[in-house]
Length: 530
Image (cartoon, rainbow, N blue to C red; front, top):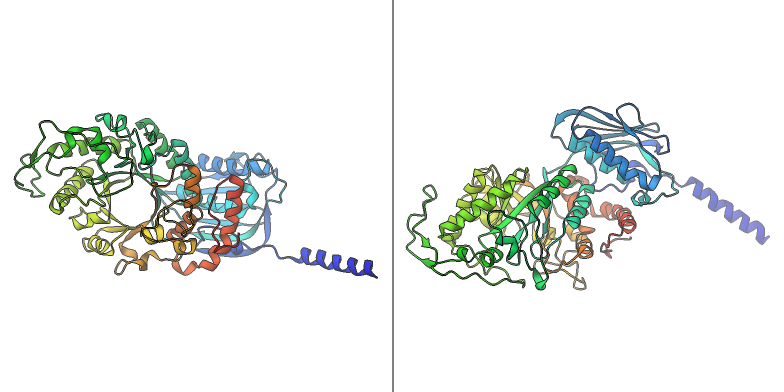
């Protein structure tokens, strides 16, 4: 009798397992969530016979196909030949636009990704990769049925600028780790990496006409470590690596505050004797009589602490602008992207009149070299050039000043988007001066409604900065960035009416499984059932 009962129960369990419904396309763990998903019936299966077919013509089409193949080969063990001749996974470029929109059609016989732009095709590839079982992230062959549900996806981003920032100045971050971060950004369709290259604690980019900036200014970091810097060749390598993943580098030289590493490198940049203000007319811009260099100027001391707001360039010293011109010229020459970030935040010891004059003149220098300035929201207290951008991090009133001048706002509210904020009081690293930012807090906000009066038409996009006062290595980056970067990426990509916390927290565990396989030491938020 007992044997018969056990046999019956075992049979029921087998039947239940057999009847278990396969997940549909709309139930897949895609982040950021696409704008439109339609379910089909059945599934497409990868096997050893599958190839990747390219349709269209562009410089990067083959690279996109090889990128997909390289992501699929290790875990599946299949060859995935890439050609223009045949294949069941089709990548079709239908135009020569800069479009980021894409469509995916999945039948039982083939997968087809189409876009009129290379970036859109690349983003379609990222979505496709997220459809496969989490073992696809493995670097060794796995025994898995590589099935994905049939159906269609139609997708495009809500904002044109979707970025993150790495502060490589407080603690230097190696080229290898920057590339690692770029790879992680690409998974979530982020397209701008803002590099905070200079601060009080370190100067991290070679300037050939001012070599002491890296020789002296790059020699230390927070806590007194050895620091470091990128040669221009290394910087160009980072730029090229990012471009292959459709990510644009935005270099930042923070000024007039946060400038001690430069002042420690060159004594002559330190403020001299105050003379009469002279004519500060922003059109004439001829301040030679404002301040003469000191006879025996003294360089400041290198700084390894974390206080802010105590350093400043002299806006009255003409050499300051010769210096800025050289720096902007050299960095712009090796930065193909449209933006140059001029900082402008926390200049607490810069007199207001001096600050306004400095920012307005530096904007002109940046414009001279063909770049559009971005600055932290304080720059909106000056007269912005048309097209220049204010990055909102602290004060809504500053964002409104930018909007009222007809300039766009880049949304990085510290209480939501700052990746260096602690999750809670038990977080092992991070700060909490703005807020504790748990995963749900990083996800549950809408850029077009966050600041009163700042609507979609005023917003360039969204950026999630990682400041590195407490970050010393890749493990620290992983802990603070993941899973919050995925949350911010969805806020930046997916329309508000498509997003919900309940949906996101049901999808993020699949990404956690992939991070586990890849050795990414992410924070396992108690808000999620991992």
